[in-house]
Length: 213
Ligand code: DLZ
Image 1 (cartoon, rainbow, N blue to C red):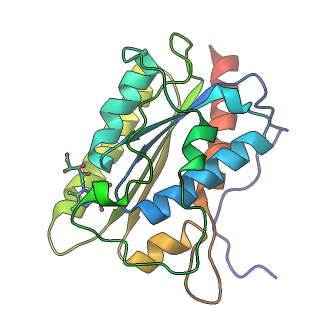
Image 2 (cartoon, helix red, strand yellow):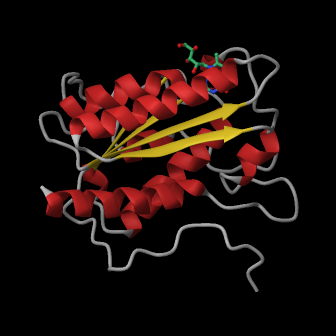
Image 3 (cartoon, rainbow, N blue to C red):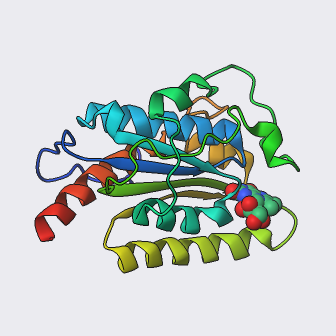
């Protein structure tokens, strides 16, 4: 029996992602969690019919870089052949029993792949972009400033461009909160991988936006 009323209800109509192109832009801070979220996102996109060849993955250093990267990915102004979802997943840590502390002073030390730069499909527009980041509160005000700035900026990108930008930025107060939201919980329950919800939101919003255009 369900013990919570939280969470998204299913879309009212059947989703079909087979004709959609979706970009995932993710940060590399707190990489254990990022890897799981990206993997959950990609597998749900594929389960909704999005072709692997129509999923592009771009990494950036931290969450603060997400809005500009999303904007550029949408405008197509950066063009560099790069990683498809498959390439990227080959370098991801998708499981593993031990979960070290997520915090690290140097984000590149958590980078599985050396920042493969996008874009699998230059010159082709994306129907949706999923911005994925993991902010974990530390001792300073950094978390508050970045969380607020990035959420506002991502909203601005989607309103300015008309392309759905899915908010896949976890703002966690503890490591455990972040792990649970990536299905990596250390307790009895592993939690739920929010990447799956973000993929569903991307397919639904991309479909709506095509109809509304
Ligand atoms: C600097 C920083 C810190 C302290 N924490 C995080 C974090 O928890 N999650 C995240 O995505 N990024 C973090 N960053 C890096 C910033 O987002 C950004 O990459 C740098 O300030 C450079 O602009």
